View 1 (spheres, rainbow, N blue to C red):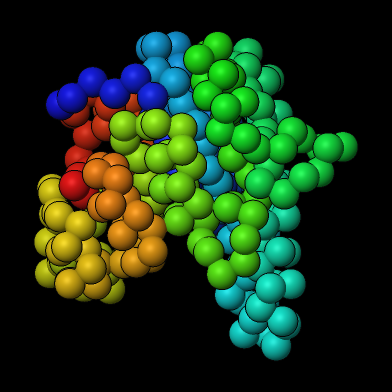
View 2: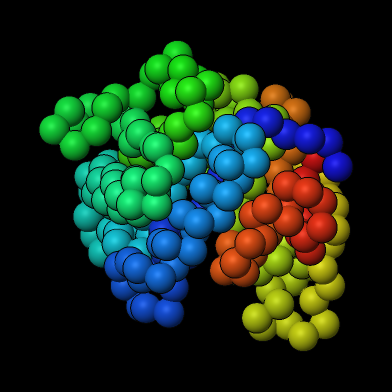
Length: 235
């Protein structure tokens, strides 16, 4: 596998719930931080985008009857909470990190600029990109691809609850087959639902490969990087 020296990790907010039904599971946050720190210690520069679905999801608010833009803003704030939690855990473990928000909130974190973020990455700090893209109607998956492209990352790592992409939902269909690699076109034409179409299209236009793996398995992040993990590559 090609050696990547700068990557972006995207995980859902739900991943940080661990065994809980809401909020943050300290054990899961710690496990993710351990895996990220190990990757940094191996010499890889790491940017991170975390969703906010463990606290609030914009689409859910819209379904409740809330105005969509306001609902999405609430979702962005949830990602900042998760970003601050990851920053605190990484700091506790001795890993330097910064939270950069797409929405200015100077009392909590710095504002995102690609130049500043690249400087922090070059200095060995984990850059946690919060508040999505700063715009409503765009998912954190799309924000992750956007940040990966802006920061010249050569691989996007998408941590999910499954060890890659399947032909169907493996939780519902026992005949679902694991796919070791797929093309961007396959994701769109076969509606594989690994990311929304805006995110996939942006990744394709910028030739950004995506590795989909299970974030729940400790140490899996490192195995994806050295080519020994069960995962799916989208390219």
